[in-house]
Figure 1 (spheres, rainbow, N blue to C red):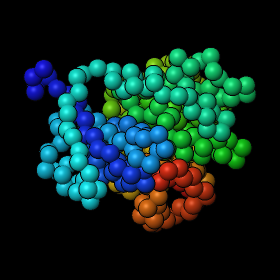
Figure 2: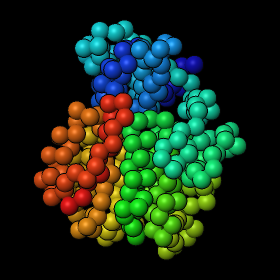
Figure 3: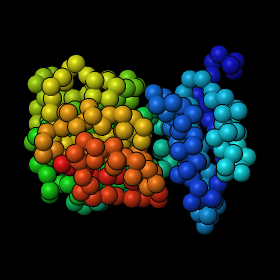
Figure 4: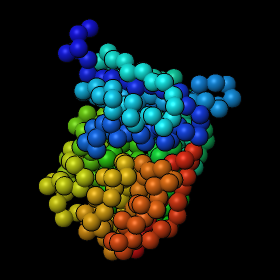
Length: 301
């Protein structure tokens, strides 16, 4: 394999369990806001005290000096290795167990026979898109959607940075009378999400968008001419802290006056910074969901 043929790079290190979220945050910055890495973090010992954190970068490899600077505080050795182009995420996800969050049961096709009674099944083949249901931020968002199920009756829902489409699909199944928009800056993610929506029978067919169906668009943030003027009354964004802060004015302008949002992709220690940005737009905290150092916040005004 020549250097020119390498499109994916993996940075790997092993840290104490409590340090894993901070290590992911440090490695996230190396990819930039437009091309954040995809993570695979898992237990490296039987008791779960030590975790391996792997960050996958698509395109150019991070500079080794930048990696060294980002991980210096952890005092752990790291490695940078090339990964051959393949649906490596999809291959690894086949080894993951299904996830139960509230009424939702997230599974791959290989676990379709394990759906428990009365669960809301979400069959997700993440492939090259983020959102298998195994990351804490995705689970926290699903928990928030489950909590909102009996507290909100949205007519228009928007999933910003939809990744695999898991959250948009969950909302389409929960609110059958709502129209759903799912957007992502990555056209590959949009393609994967549309395929997953088809598997779950909630993909939009033609226009206008029918209730309980999802329309997919490739767009950065909320800047999409196809949906200009849309006013969602529920918005979900599971991305990163800096993009969430930058999007605060646009989200505030787009959301209906009594609308609700679920924001995630942040560490618990970043909650105050996120809340400061959205309090400035007139929002207050309804509820927070936390899992292993990560947070999802439910806000309204």
